[in-house]
Every structure is written in structure tokens, then in C-alpha cells.
Image 1: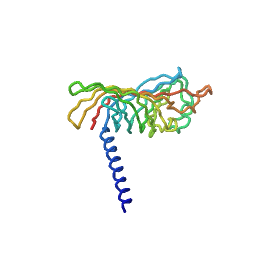
Image 2: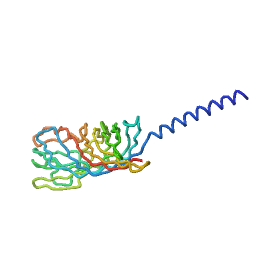
Image 3: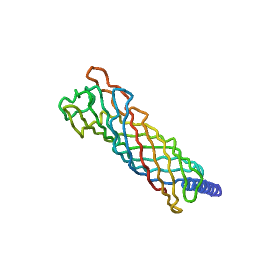
Length: 242
């Protein structure tokens, strides 16, 4: 009986210690809700493919901010990147979106100089490192770098503009890679509105590291279209920390 009581006391002691540690960890975590508009564009490593325009994009992210100390923290979360993409002009035409069933006539022989537009949505899983300055009145400034993000493509539509051809709303999921891995860097300020609520604002640049485009197309001369398409985004980030 005494042995059982002793074991129960040990178990309760361990439980209380673990609960206290868990509470300490929770005390070091803040939730962050960030949203804001941005501009997005696509570039290529092929000099016959030009960036011709950008898209207005939109992001919303829910993040957890785990404080390592008063000035450094680790962030992670989930969010949406909407209307990412842009336009690119192809000096050489051909069967550029070979994996998609296009609505235009002779979609497998697009003209030289055609402009292809991309409209892409992703679910994001970012993780990063945040550094803060000392507090100046109610303000602190921060740098968020590096930030790495894995995106899962959920939607992709395209537009076509060229000599004798024009369309929009083309279903081009098969032309866009399902995974998009990239990096970002950001900076901004935090305003301590009250003891339990902080407002934050800043800017962030993001760029993919992986090729976001499918390389199954071919140009008119029969050569393979195997360029690397990189998506870029510059966005305004407004949010609350609680």
C-alpha cells in the first residue's frame, strides 16, 4: 500500500512538472494573423521568354510566434497565397501548354510572340526566424529572415493573347508544379496597442526556388521548352499579434 502511494505521489509530481513546463511554453507563444495585398510576377531563365506583366495578389496567414528570448523568435504557420502569377511573352510559339486541353483553335501551335498569363493559388506552410530591436516607446522594429515556405498548388488558370488568338480562364493545373518551395525576407514594425494586443505592419519579398512551370511543351522548331519559371511576390503585411 505504501509502495503504491509512493508511486502515485511520484506520478503526480511528474505530471505537475510537465504541466508547468507546458504552461511555460504556451506563455512563450503568440498567435499572429497577417493579411495584405501584393504584386506578383514570373521570370524565366530563357532569354527568349520575357516578363511582361504582374498580377495583384493577396495573402492571409495564421502564424505561431515562439519566443526564444525577448528579441528572437521562431515562426511557423499556414496560409493562402491567392492570385499569384503574371504574364510572360514567348518569342517562339508552339505547343507551349501541351498538358492542358485548351479552348482555342490550334492550341498546340500558338503563334510567335504569344503572351501567356498565369493565375495560381497556393496553400502555404511557412517557417522562419524573427529578430526584434529594443522597444522605442510603444514601437519595436523587426526583420523576418530567413523565411522558408512550402506551397501546395490548389488552382491554376491561364490566359492567351497573341496574333489571331485570345482566351482567358484556361484550366492549366497540369502546367504548374504541385509543390512550390521558396524563401522570403521581410521587415516591419510592431505597435504595442495594449498588454494583450499588438499591431504589426511591414513588407515581404518572396521568391520560389523550384521551377513552378511544367517543361513538357515544345517550340515550333521541335526543341523542348525546358525553361525554369520563378515566381516572385512583394506584399504588404498587416496584422495583429495576441
